[in-house]
Image (cartoon, rainbow, N blue to C red; front, side, top):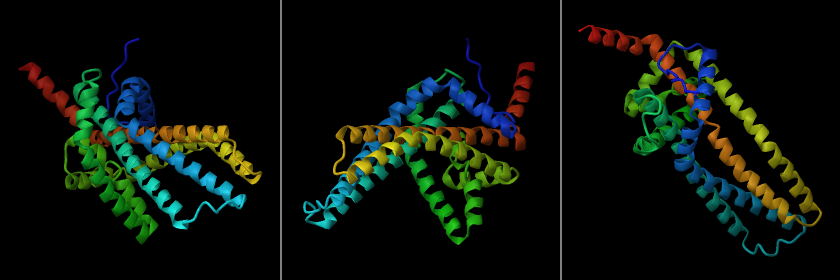
Amino acid sequence: MKKKYIDFRKERHFGEVFTATFSFLNQNIKPLGKALMLYAGPFILMAGIATALVQSSVFDLQADLYQNNMGQYNDPFEWMYSFFFYYAFIMIFYVIGYTMIIGVLYSYITLYVEEGMDNFTLDDVRKRAFSNFFKIIGTNLVIGFIIALGFVMCCVPGIYLSTSLSLILIIIFSERKGFGDAFSRSFRITKKQWWWTLLLIIVTNGIIGAVSYVLSLPQAIISGIITFSSLDGGINSTTQIVYMFLSVLQAFLNSLLYIVPFTSYAFHYYSLVEKTESPALLEKINNIGTEDE
């Protein structure tokens, strides 16, 4: 069955945004998934492995504590230094992986809109994603600081700012704008549909939270087994390996789940632009005029 092109540049109601989001992801799961695995996957995988190693070290320390076997820790700060080193390593790779997920997804979406379905390659996606890599990191750092400051001042400013700036990254990719222009543009676009934008953020992240919780259940069960095993005098190595595998898998899947809210933000952005500016309609009118000539 031939795939049908999904038009981003059209007005959509709240429910239609969700329908379009899952239809698009279902339609493009293979090429988009391949791009994410190639360019974001290795960084997320490294972060997941480092996370699993840290958790394994915590379980070993917990077992030694219960068994009064703390003599091997001559320097109490040595373990802490190792922990913070691993934590820094984890954060670096998560930041890179998260950045690449956004870069690959929005590069794929904007190429899909501009070039049409199946009219671009994974290399095109890679080039656009990498060319915007530092712009994504810089934007996230600045808006993260601004939003955090808003929450410190009071919860309401934080919510307002996080909602108003939710479309800044898709604007940067779609309109090729710098940070300052994209910043003000995001405020203008979301202004008349602010409550719907907030609801979209709550619902999409709620879905991700629920799915993440379900994915974490096997790991939580194994964690409980390991904890009780440490009380009985030892941790089964097989159980610990299974836990580490589940930890890596969960970290990987949880990171990839964020393509759902970010895709919905893209559909919401194009919908808001059509409602306020109707660029697609104007383009069709211009094309008709050109054909008549």
